[in-house]
Length: 231
Image (cartoon, rainbow, N blue to C red; front, top):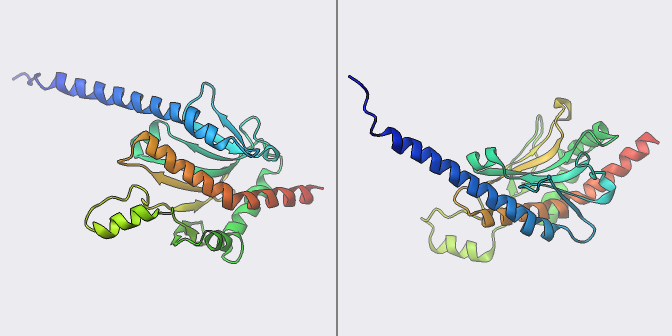
């Protein structure tokens, strides 16, 4: 008996619609990164770079960080095919092969971040927010979670049975391992399931703001230490 073929067109059509929806979503993120996120970050001496042609892949750095060719020290975020599938996007501090003292930078930065009485403790202290788990290879330290504005707090108090955690979805900061050859110093996956593209970009912007505020002094100090070591 030949298999029924009536359902085949519907499956094919659904795949086609899923593909079109994905393309539409990707275009929305590409546009928002170029027209909203990049201009917001490109101020006070900060440099923003997008891949060419512009898409939802962004580097944020200071001139002294050597990221003019997108291969130096930078904060990074992107929303591409994998992120659309997993519904989570990274915000990270990276140091890539264009940095002449890459190995030293990665080692010093990760060591300081893993020290509870060093930079790791400073993050939580400066931001005065509840801790969130930070996964390292051998050590863990407390870092701050995303902040939740007062309106969200009140809504959760008034409707405790509603699942509405769009602003405070759990985030885990992971410290990189220099021995692995990876370029990541510290990274957080920002979940965006149930959010619009615009809401997602807003959450990524908030995390980038947090990285700028808290990690920039660490980056600048580590660069100076690396240069002294090489002198």
